[in-house]
Amino acid sequence: NLQILLASRPTGRPSRENFKFVRTPLPAPGEGQVLLKIRYLSLDPYMRGRMSAAKSYAAAVEIGDVMEGGTVAEVLESRHPDYKPRDMVLSHSGWQSHAVADAKALRKLNPDQAPVTTALGVLGMPGFTAYAGLLTLGQPKSGETVVVAAASGPVGSAVGQIAKIKGARAIGIAGGAEKCALVRDEFGFDAALDHHSPTFAEDLRAVCPNGIDVYFENVGGKVWDAVFPLLNSFARIPVCGLVAQYNATGDFEGPDRLPVLMRDVLTKSLTIRGFIQREFSDQRPAFYRDMARWIAEGRVKYKEDIVEGLENAPEAFIGLLEGRNFGKLIIELA
Ligand code: NDP
Image (cartoon, rainbow, N blue to C red; front, side, top):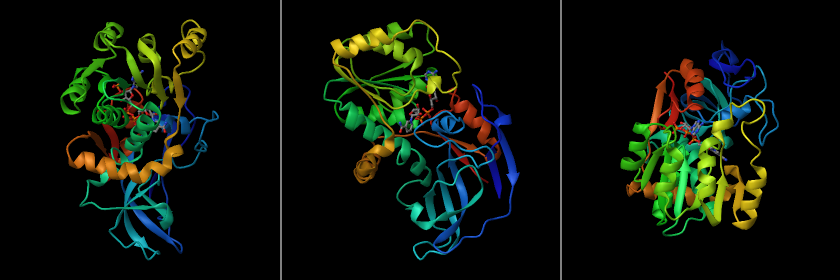
């Protein structure tokens, strides 16, 4: 069993030295458990938080523990009547080649219904995050303008496409021309803007002539600075992630913006609401139903970035926090 452990906690940008590779004997499943061979490992921005000891909504990975993560796995051996060898399942087995799991913690996947990798992306946690966060908190209405960054990734791409289904205008922000082309031409956003452009703030103003009604916050940083002056009265801002600052250390740059923010929260009646997707777990059945239908109808598309080899997980993860991925980042195990 090849495992990747957290070796040390990063300060700022994670590095290869924060991870340690070990080989351990294959574990044996107990009663009610299965032995899994991991096929695909999901890499997600939240893992940066798990590497840190700072207090957060979920416990940190301890030094010496296997890095946490969602996985698609094949059952090798089963001691539970609902599972048999070769079944494909969604599990939360982390950065390793094999694992034992309680059968009740698994979800069986049907490879004939959808590629199993979608259980980590558009039909999994990131897709659900977009669905629940946008519809419950963002509440886009026909004709409104919805803005989202990290728009070529699994959360952002679903946010914009669901906004379009609800009749809103979708503006996507992404890093670079290639990502912007995907967002516009493949995902059907009304416009896509490169946040690396020196004219980014003006570009955003130009494509939002009627202001912004919903800003689905994935990144923070200079994207938020450009969005903030364009927010309309009664705008909704679901705060989903702040990936631009996950590697930050110390104090943030620039003047204190808090008084101006609070003034606009008051005078524009803004709703800023953070959320963690699992708060909305009761919406999962509706999500699976709606999202599967939208994909089948061609109304929601997705892009995956599949990197081969568990040994490449640390480098791929470091790149994810810097925009080097292009679509939902997944490690395919040999
Ligand atoms: P992505 O696959 O989109 O990867 C993150 C992307 O963030 C990068 O590809 C990069 O895209 C962008 N990015 C990185 N740094 C910056 C920056 N400084 N400025 C602007 N963009 C930047 O990730 P996901 O779709 O998986 O996640 C998107 C967000 O949703 C994250 O913040 C994540 O933490 C959050 N999330 C929150 C959940 C919740 O329950 N609240 C659940 C799941 C995800 P680009 O090159 O286009 O800039």
